[in-house]
Structures are given as structure tokens and as C-alpha cells.
Length: 285
Image 1: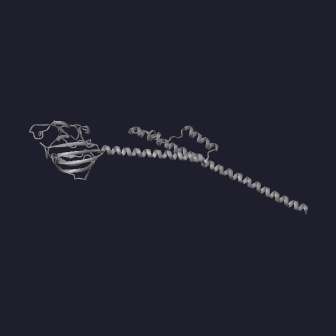
Image 2: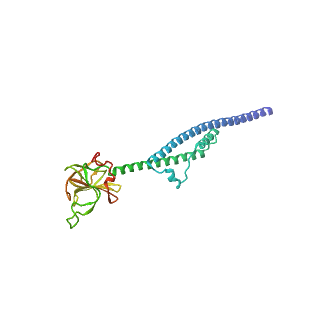
Image 3: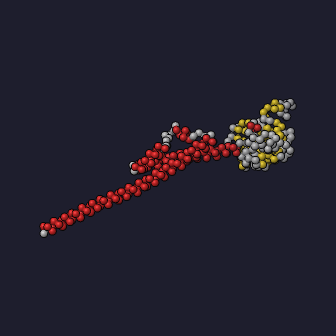
């Protein structure tokens, strides 16, 4: 009985030990398999991070080229004095690859890298939004700048001092007065066009100017078209560059059919010829 009892206990002990050993071995292989899967996932993640970096570096280079072409200051230079800047270089990427191959890439490393990519992506997005705003603003400014001739004809009186054909106040003599625009003469009812995009602020009779049109272009620009025979727009209308707005006449203080054309910038009259790209004798004159 003692021998049988010893045999049972020995068998039980061996069974328990075998089960424990087998369990440990199974845990080892399961853990090893998990590590292999985790390593494959980390390797794939690192590859994706590298691809994301390449895309961001392309975006950064494109951003820099666009700013150079547009004459804009580099966003990195602007932010350099405001916040810390940095970015991975070739050695950083090599270091990341070695970490992946050695299996020493930790969750904190991945998180730090992902946060860096997110921050860089936000900077690139903000920069491209700024470039888009700049281009839109420049386009709006270009459309608001009176750069085309408002009518065809020849200049009979330029911008600046001249002898007034009506004389000075209280005198029948020709007085030396300042002419705040240019006079362009042609046949009656010659079409007159808006020199730039804008909104009609006035269209009707005005003492001295006769039937006139005043267009506000924004960006501190406005244009005035005087002595017209009739207008083709009304107050509040939005007009585009080259749109018909009036016809040439000789209303108001005028000695013949012509357009009195003025350009105002920042509340003061300026020489319209300094904006016109096509000179007399060319297209549209």
C-alpha cells in the first residue's frame, strides 16, 4: 500500500510539473508570437511614418518655392521668433529605422514622432492657407486697380496744372488751375467702360461734372467719369472691369464731347496715366 501510495503521489507530482512546464512553454511561444506580430506592426508603422515625412518634406519644399515666387516671407522665419521649430533629418530617419530593426522602438517614441508629424502638418496647412489668402487678396487688388482705358479717344487735357477754359472765379481771364483727372475726347455717345471691378456709388447729375458716375473699387481706389450724355448703371450696381457704364457727352461745365476721368486713391486724386497699361494709340485708346 505504501508503494502504491508513493506511486500515485509521484505520478500526480510529475503530472502537475509537466502541466506547469508545458504552460510556461506555451506562454513563451505565445509571447514570442505576439512580439513578432507587434514588431511587424511597428515596422509597418515606421514605414508609414517615413512616407508621411516624405510627403511633408515635399509640401515644405513646395511651400518654400511658392513663397519665393510670390515674394512672401518664409513662414518658418516668421515663426522662428515665436515658437521652437525643428524637424527630422536623414540621421533622424536612420535612427528611427535602427530602433525598429532592433525592436527598441517604444510607444512613447511612436507617440512623439506622430505628434511631431501632426504639428508639422498643421504648420504646412496654415502656410498654404496663408498663401491662398495672399493670392486671393492680390487677385482682388489687381481687379480693383483701374488699369484699362475707360474709353477710346485722344487726351485733350492731362492731369496737373493747366489754364482753365472757363477762367478764374470772378474773372474772365484763363486761370491756372489744377486739373484732377484727364480729358479724353471722341465722338458723341462713345461707350465708356469701368476701369476696374467695383460698386456704383453715384450715377446722376452733379454740378460741374454734369451727368457722372462714381465707382468704388475697394482697396482705397475709386474712379469718376464726368460729362457723360447718359449712364447705363444705377447706384448699388456691381460692375466688372470693361463693363459699359455710360456714354460720352458734353454735360456740365464742358466745351465739347469728352470724358473727364479721375482716379482717387486713399481719398486723394492721382494721375490716371500712372495706372493705365495701354498708352494712347494702342488698344482701347
